[in-house]
Each structure stands twice: as structure tokens, then as C-alpha cells.
Image (cartoon, rainbow, N blue to C red; front, side, top):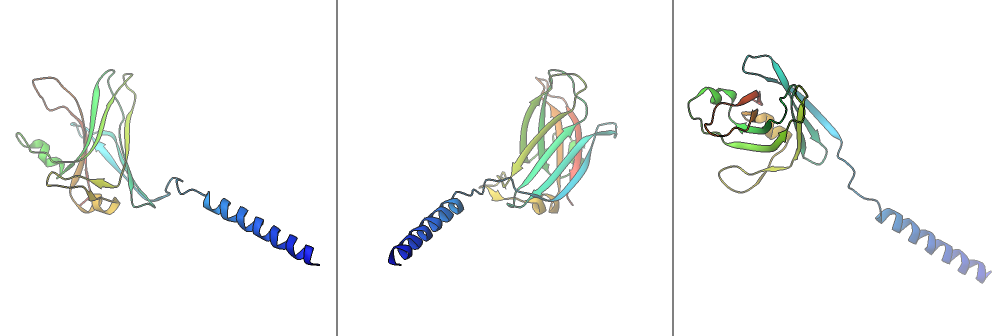
Length: 168
């Protein structure tokens, strides 16, 4: 009888150890699920639809920001940014643009194809100092606008391809 109790105790300890290891090996690196989603139309200079801005909130307090233009020209380097203020700033002479989020550049490989840039956002670094938390609600609460422009050599000209107000 004592042998059976020892065997049962050993099996119980082994089962507990296996359960503990399997529980500890679970990872939290799964992609965060999308909670809320907002789509905004990008407009060209002639006010026709030129693409989309898609904002998707994630469960980990971040959000994905996707900016897409519908048509492109081969070998043109497009710059994707989100700027503090509204698109009215683009109509002023020599505007001071405070970039809120720089999505980076993307070069088109063919003419006519869509060009898309996506980033995941947790924080931004304003011109006034250190990085601050920035979430889905932060982007929609204040005046920001998305801008896609192409990178030009001197002389600098208005190279805005598409833009759209985000928030307020």
C-alpha cells in the first residue's frame, strides 16, 4: 500500500511539473485584436478620392495607422506623415508643420499601383519634448491631418499628392 501511495505522489508531482511548464511556456506575443476601426478618405488637389487612412485600435493600447494612395508613378518616392493641425495649413504660405507621426517613405515600383504604408503607434514625440503615450482616442480627439507627398529636389514645390483631416 505504501508503494502505491509513493507512486501516486510521484505521478502527482510529475503532472504538476508538466502543467506548470506548459503554463509558463505560453507566450503573450500574439497579435493584439482590433477593437475599433475608422476609415477616412484621402482627397487629391482636385478633391477626388485619392486613397484612404485606416486607424485600427488594438487591445494593447496601441493602434495601427495605414495610409494608402490609390495611384502612383513609377520610381517616385512618397512620404507619408500625420501632421498637427488641419489641411488648411497647406493653403498658407510657408506653413510651419509639426509632424505628429512620420510613417516613412515608400517608392513606387510600377505606375498606377496603390502604395500603402502602415505603422503601429504607442507613443509620439512632440516638438516640445519627450515621448508621450498616444492612443486611438488621442489621434481622434485633436486636430491632425494625413498627408502624402512626393520627395522633390530643389526647388521645393508643393508636392502634396493626397490629404485628409483626422479627428475633431
